Image 1 (cartoon, rainbow, N blue to C red):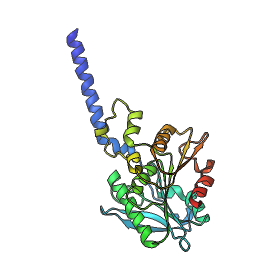
Image 2: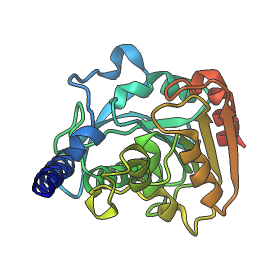
Image 3: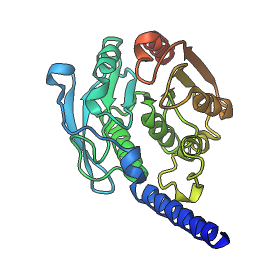
Image 4: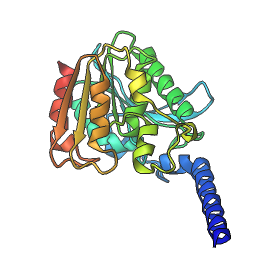
Length: 264
């Protein structure tokens, strides 16, 4: 009897170890889900043009760019893990209509870009695209708007570049925290390769931050955004969207609030 229990225990441990190894090796497949096809701006956002930016790691990413009039502020938009640069075309059009310059950012390994998606590669690309914008307009303020994964990227960028304002839509506290909530029996900090510790990136900053989150977000729970918001000590504002999901905050009140925040 005890021998059977021992064998069963050893088998369960082996299966757990195999599952843990598989999750470690494949975690980026779950984290980054790029679409298969690239779509250009001609039909979706004709006021924008494609620009290719080379990162310090040698990756080439295709961003969408609309130069501002005079010295108007520029908004950089960072999309989520399952979309591409074209995802934000409606947002780009609205921001351009409101008088902003806009750069729709791209990630390595996503449509229109070379390389593989990792935190190091994506943050390096974000910094390179920020530097491109700064080279185009040396005096314009640069605002950064990120949604979901893009909020994590935006937080990292704000810690290394001179970002004037920050919009975080459906952000998470850290990728480790997300893993712990979704798969608690497999979540070990040392096993999470791309940690995106947004709370650490924002620590010590003093720039205005706007947080937006839908109450029915099933991808990034609102408590993740609330935890990040509570941890930030700088000037901050929030919009909780009742019945908002992970992808419709802009259309359910976010547009007016974000543009108002950026124009303030």
